[in-house]
Length: 268
Image 1 (spheres, one colour):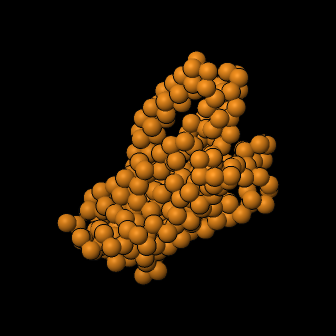
Image 2 (cartoon, rainbow, N blue to C red):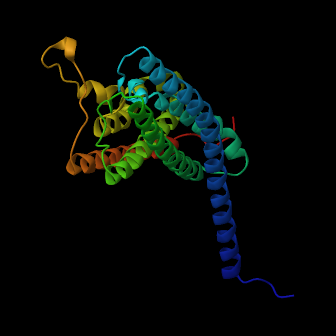
């Protein structure tokens, strides 16, 4: 039996470290995806009842709903993502470290999981909007988005999938940043919530959705009683919106990485 050389031993240790790192990343990502699936099932089931009920109810009453039922909630799907992001960073931190994970593998797992959950939500959101439009028009009602990016061609539909995916990804990472901030600074972490929200504000502005996006694009013409948030038009608007949303994801990821680097890796 031959004795392994120093080089072989070093390579073996490197392989073990890499395997452990990838295993940790996969575990965090899998946990986040599973949680996102559970939250998504509940959210979209409740949304379907709400959207069908409010659309059919207005049609029976002889009213015209005019705008998307989903947009009228001003981005309701975002808020559960913040909670999910907090749980993904703080909730698994001690367990992850106890199992031999690192801050880096936790970070990569949260980012990968957030991108996966965001992609799923992007597809489902676009399908939900198409379903709303089909139902409204079949009942003789008008339908339009409340602000948002263009939604009038196959290309803009694909853009909507990407935009909504980036929105959810940003909010998940924002939630993870909030959780990491509290884990690092405890009660003082409250002071970080506002600056950490910059990516969330940016993604709202870029996609013209959510509370901030709707308020920023409201038009008070001819007066405040007729205020509305008109839908956007044009390929350039779509591209600028997607660019801004992608920048928001990158910024949120950078903030999360900076925070996780300073968190103690000792199990608590």
